[in-house]
Amino acid sequence: MQIKNNRANYLQNRWIIGLIKLLVLAGCLFFIITKLQDQSINLDEFIWPASFGFIIGLVLLLMVFNWYLEALRWKVSLQPFEAITIKNAWQVILGGLALNWVLPFTSGDLLARISQQQDKYQTTSAAMLNRGIMLCFTLILGIYGMSKVAMEYEVNGWFALLLIFSYPVFRWLFKKSLNRFFDYFRNIDRITLIRIIGLSLARYLVFVFQFYLLLSSFLPDLSADLLVAGIGWVFLIRSVLPLFFGGVGVREASGIVFFEPYVSNLQLVIIPIFLIWMINTVLPSIVGLIFVFQFRVNIAR
Image (cartoon, rainbow, N blue to C red):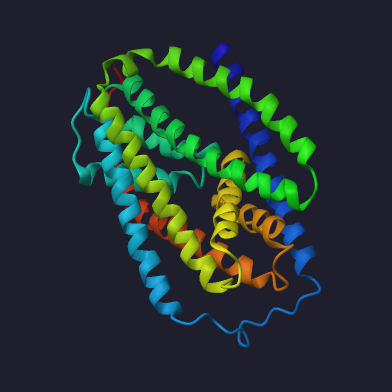
């Protein structure tokens, strides 16, 4: 009876999560269409940036390097309790990226990582550490982007209140996570932790640089400071909202919110954001589908 109730609750929660994600997607697409309805979109007449092919090629190479950094970071994270090769780490990460399309809140990535390792608890701890570090970098640059939005839309007071009330929440979440996964943090040495943080920072900077290359090619008149702030804003919104179809619509809508005061042609915002999603998410996910069918679940310890 208890099992049936748990299954019913799980299915109910999954439907609720799916509905929320669908509403977010529908709202973002409606917002984008509303903003573009007065602008004629004709890609045949669209003037593509100079050296566009070179930029796309460079962004593609950086995508491969970016996922290599993630594979290396995952390998280093598992070193304190389990050995794994770069090849295996890469397969797990790309397979998890593919599973994110069908599982809520990017839990496909976490499921793929846990399922392929023997020590499930330590693996979960390592994955949470990886996510926590990336979230810190996302928050730092995202808050900078939020400050730009607050100043542009004259909501500085609300922005200040958000920061004030968010601090104790994030502090509580950090302490709770630290206590829950204390065994993993206690066994990890300082050098390994520094390497994980360094690789996380390198990966985030590659993300930012990829995005910057595309945005600056379409929006050459905007300052580097403004483009970086916009990137931080888009990454932050993408991280905190429940997403459907890999986040399509959410990135574009958040980009419009940020860049609309500075750009008259919103196509110049939507196209590079869509391209970075295709390159960094869609293409690796297609490759990851191959590895999903090769997964073998290890027995939990």
